[in-house]
Length: 369
Image 1 (cartoon, rainbow, N blue to C red):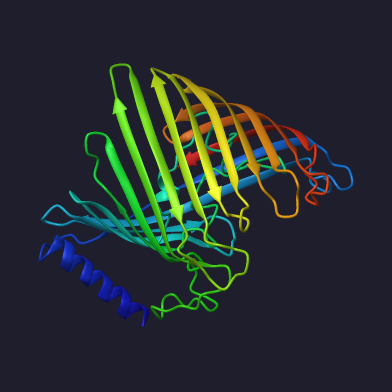
Image 2: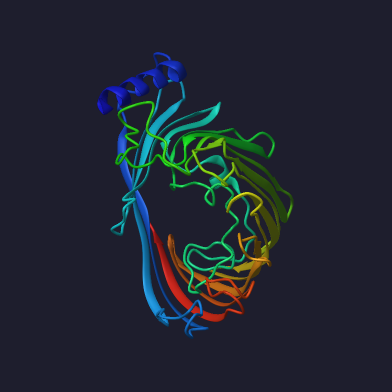
């Protein structure tokens, strides 16, 4: 059944977008990916009942993926391809993404398991490296994080759920994206989802249906300076059979301004009804980076406030950090960071965050291929 559906979809897409155009060589497979490795030490509140209790002081970690990509440009100029991302570590989500795409003068259309427009186009300030940073970085040493900047990722029940995404061409610096997710709990072909065998997979409790993501960017390059303005939003359509968990929305906006090797910026995100009715989160971050030849240094601050059901006060998290990176060669980077994270909240918070405080020291590497 899966082969029939995939074959029909491919024929329909080519028929609608490419007409009778054909390329003599067909689709060619290529490989890519990345390997990130890091080591860090954290000194924090580790007494009984504290957030750092029974956690290791230091640790090693890796994050790796291999990309299988294939594409062909047809005689009429339209590029048709596919991309499959395989996780380098043993995970339940072993295939991170798998989608087909059609790209040309009309923009790009993606169909399958992939990030949505809001996940790809939301704004962050400068100041982070491949491994470390104050704003939702790839890895963290602290037991807390203000990682609430991604408006779509914070809501989706599954990372890279099945969806349709459209990215526009760039018109005088302006571009936009639009995505539709039928159900945010459909990525893996297992359990009751059965997304490969029916157009009507089962909808689990708390999953959101008919969701929409949007993103908008403006990029301007002047003489010796540049400007990037952008924002993103995500809207849940219908949350399945859940009392007290209404449809949520997320909004993000930011600006980055560059002068030669110096870049400064700020971003803001608001998440509405993410923890239940009237439970909201907002996050703000500022930062800068400065590049000289192979060296880049950065600094930044992030602040998050969230409403938690049953607490009389907001949960507040701050993170301040300095980063540095060195490009050893094409696709090979060494990086490091020093961070101070702290939190305050209601004394009845069972998460142990009240008056939490930590210092982190981290070093890492990033290899892309």
